[in-house]
Structure formats: C-alpha cells, structure tokens
Image 1 (cartoon, one colour):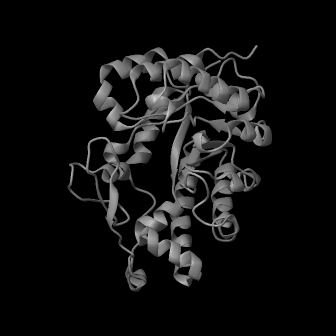
Image 2 (tube, rainbow, N blue to C red):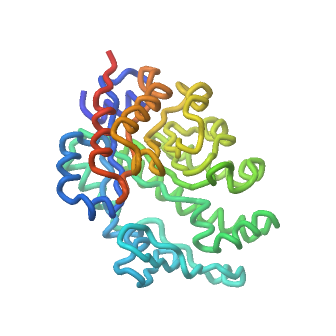
Length: 338
C-alpha cells in the first residue's frame, strides 16, 4: 500500500501494513544538522505530504525575516524573533483596545499563495501521500490580536466584543476549510495550545461554553468536505479530550509528556487516533538513544495496538541530537501490523 492508504488505515484503524511516519522539524534543527538531517529523513520518509509554504505565507511573518526586526502578519499583528532557532512573539496587538474593533478589517480568507502551492504539490505527488494542511487557530488568534492578558480578562468578563471577534475568525476559517476540501486534501489540522504543564489555561466549563461550539462548526465543515479532522494542542488538556472526540476530532496531536501515556491509552486508545507527541522537553533533547527507543515503544503500545490508532512523529528542535532523531524514526519504522 502507498503512504496515503497507510495513513488513512491508521486513522480509521483498518490495519495498515506498518506504522505511518511524519516529520516535524523546527528551523533550528536544519541550521544545526544541515544535510545530515535531510539524509536521515530520506532513509525514513514521511507518509504525510505537508507542503512547506512558510516562505510565502503568514508562517514566515511569524518567524520574521531578520532577528530583532518586526514582521506584520496578514491579521495586522507584529512579530519579532530574537534568535535563529525560535518563532517570534507578538509585540503589537492590533486589537489591544476594543475601540479599534469597529474599524478593524479581517483579512480575506482566499487569494493567498498557500492554496496554489498545495495544489501544485498535490499534482506532483499523484496521490502517493496523505495530504495534511493547516486549518489555522482560534484561541491563539484571539490573543495574538488582543494580547494574552486582555484575552483572559475578556473571557472572565464575558465581553460581547469577544463574541464578535471569535465569530469573525470562525468565518475566516470556515471559508478556508471549504476551499481546502474542494481541493481534495485528506486532513486539516486545527491548532490551539490550551494547556500549561499541569492544567488548562481556563476552566474546562468555560472552554465548553465559549469555544466548543465554534470548534464543532469547524470540524463539521471539514467532515462535510470529506477530510479528517486533526487537532493539535500543547499542555495538559485531558479534561477536554472527551469533548474533542465528541465533536469530531479524528486525530489528536498532543504533548504527551505532561500527561500519563498509560492513562490516556486506557481511556482513549482505540477511540481516536493519536499522532506524535514524543517528549521534546526531556527525552528527545537530553535522553539517551535507549531512552528514546523505550519511550517510543511505550507510546506505540498505548495507542497503536488497535489495528492502527497511532501515527509516528516527534518535533525536532535545535537541541535534539541527530542520533536521537534516528532512534525515534528507526523505532517507529520497525512496527508492522501482521
């Protein structure tokens, strides 16, 4: 079977031939390892096609062209990065005062280069790989525009302006989801970091009241167009995992290192496909090769034993030794479904 079928079977738990693999790499890792990392990836190729359109789109603005130089994204937020290894932070929030909302212009959802780039990549790929595209962010977009402190206060005060902002972002995302699905992509990944190291940023009840209905609309739109729903969140978000499954998430990409892998496997294994999550805070950057191998086996045993249910992957940053990247990929590659 080809890579596309392998990933689909893993997500739908219909017994792929082997565990699918993905690559997730921060720019600093390429700066540190160069061609050696690319050679390693060629030995353990990704089953997922995630066209790299950062240089032509908003992602490049978030990293910025030069250290210390501000870059304005399509929403009007200004980003500055301080190193070659990390994404920038927002230093100017276009809606830092609600008085600006009445004149704020939401960006147009279509007409951006990423659609042409993905379309070209899909034609060249000829259906060999599973095509996964970015569905954008809701909560993070709110605090990029408002500032984190303002956004948290808005939630607690139940500001009516916050509903207007949420719905404007939602409308933008829904138009783009319809465009992506019309192109025939296989999956759309929505992303919002909801957790700290040991709890959620806001009460789960508030998340359910304000954000869950919007996510449900986004996920319905993706399913209506025939795409799988992928959802990424860092931090400890265990309280809302049942909600995410309920409203249609097919694949969860979580920071597994801040939760019990065994507990997650017992409670949610076989109910949703997990993706990646290899510990990038401790084990990948500072563990031994044996530590990485054992950790990967623990993850696969928890989630990948349901005739699928897991897609291999781990984020590689500048602090990850090349031998640990190889240990991770080699261990993923060794898993076969017989």
